[in-house]
Length: 413
Image 1 (cartoon, rainbow, N blue to C red):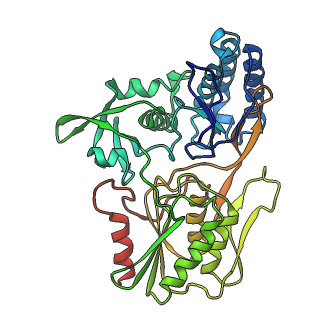
Image 2 (tube, rainbow, N blue to C red):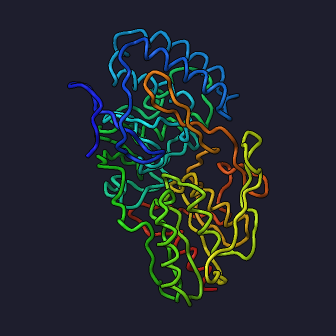
Image 3 (tube, rainbow, N blue to C red):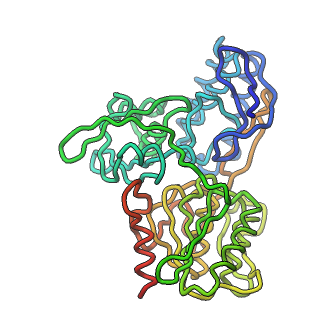
């Protein structure tokens, strides 16, 4: 049962995991607007000091902090919900899906990608659907890759995007616009989502249900596909130590196959190296580098993985990655590629940039998670810029699984 940390008539507030829905640890609540101001000032300083991608956002952040300090002294900020909403609005101005608070309410913005179900890219002046999460509300509604989104909840698409952009509207970059489009497409917890699309010259109104599909109870699922191909899917469990044992069990059960497919398309919540590296270790011999960290990282610049297990996978490997491959999932994708141990099929990933560290806010005890150092493919490209080299639609909603078919076709050669 989730702990409600609020008074009547305000949204319940919950602890949240990095890119998951909710957790259940209690926290200290702010008591008045002075507390809100203390948190605002601390957040402003934490971003300036620790956020590795701060430089292109500096002018917008200065304006954000100036306005937020005034808002923190208003009566609305005296409630837990108002205090939280103020901090969330501030973080919106960083247009970075890897920035988050460890707290949320029943009306907070949904996190992208873990709380989203379709992806928009602005192409040729149009907002085009380029990915749809299978089994999600968007997929069930009939939304299709290639649809042009013309409105969200009846609001024209560009006006809807601007609702997330408070400062610097006269010079909005493509990256910031795409962030705003996808943040608005995900919407807010507890809010119905309507989307108007144009398809074949006809406009259609759709109502989207819960964006998050049902997740299997097992941390890893697997099956033997036609052609004696072993298929292993990691079910958003890269932060769960039990996933390593489940992964090993899947390898044992599929031992003897003629090829392998490792599906990373359901890893939006990320995870940690303590889970991902043992999995990678089943595919190599010895100790090999698979990822680099930037100069702000205090540890070793080159991250290495060691071989592990009673046997190693030697047959060809295909990896599937897409928009719901996030953070540590992205690390595994670039790892397989950098180790030259697999062909990676799919489309651009979640692009959750950098490595995350948490910074506690003094009044509430809540924490803000910020990318504090860069992460790179072993060949030097930043992880969030890298794309699967064998490009194919990775997340096709209710349509055919084009990425899986591309991998099967390659393995059958």
